[in-house]
Length: 255
Image (cartoon, rainbow, N blue to C red; front, side, top):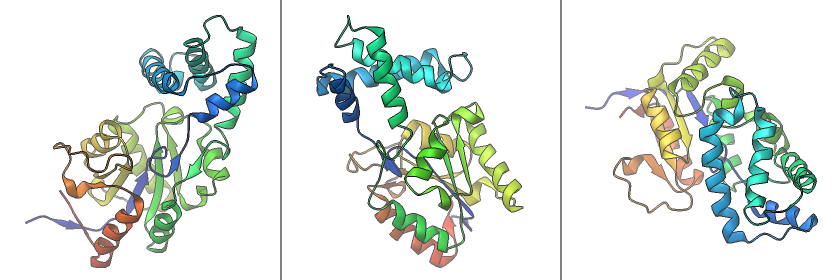
């Protein structure tokens, strides 16, 4: 028989879970500075550069001394030089300044249609909500600008904390922040993390002994034997229906 527990804390990933963004902004800003960009090459370049920089300068350069701003500046340089190898650094600096600024505002971030619906529902249930995100110091401003910051008791970024998901220490820190701000000792079994990345969100939370939900908006039908089907949802609206049944019963089944 599975043990039933009361859910006291729910934390969210941001990108791909609560908010979405589009690489098209790179194309628009590049065009403003005379740099045409092939969209097909852009996505490939961005993915490769992000992976490479994450290995060379983990946590957006927090521990290697370059800092998050220069981390993203390197990203912009890499992406555009893949298609414009001889472009002047002065031009790339202007492009980088524009993009770094934009991605700190709601000009480059958009709420999913079901985000507010779920957050409002959970807030009314008096469940403590928080954010655990592999993000830099712009996240507070992004959440404020997209008008969802008031829903959260705390915003925990990898850059400020110094470690990123799936490191279990960032999940432990979320429990500490909850205890500090609400005088409540929430156990890992009473906490749930919701995110869109298997390796970072789902595995990280599970390794920390939390409950975990995986959001797969783009490919909800992908079969992944590593994750029980009951832990995968295609959007937050379907997740709300599921959570409401658990909350109405006053418990969540611990797996």
